[in-house]
Amino acid sequence: MNIVKKIALTFSIAISLATISATAFAEASAEISETITHVEQALADVNKSDFSAAVLHLKAARLSSEHITGNEAVVKQANANVIQAQIQSKFGDVQKSADELNKALVLYKTL
Image (cartoon, rainbow, N blue to C red; front, side, top):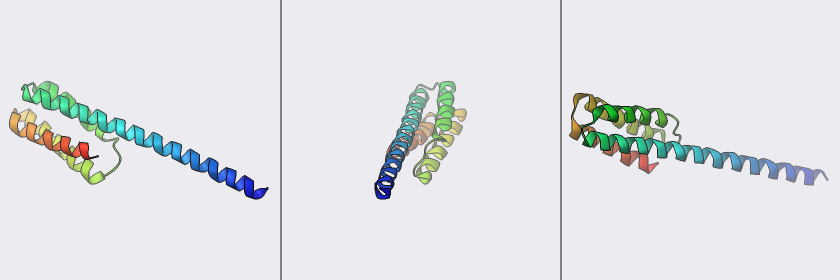
């Protein structure tokens, strides 16, 4: 009887861990999608030379990217690109800002 109880307990724990892992993966995917959306909107605003709206999207992208788990080196590099795009937006440089945002998009999409 003890063996049956141990097997049931082990099976129950395994199911619980699988459920938690699936939930964490779904939350990470949502954060990545939200970040990508903000970066794409910022890129569209930069291309229209609407830097004030772009800066708002870049700030939102940086906030949502803080919750991304996974390859930390890629996330760190993508965040660095977003920060550089934000700096270039403040200077009004459309081309450099767009280049940095495109680099960040490529990195975020690899996650």
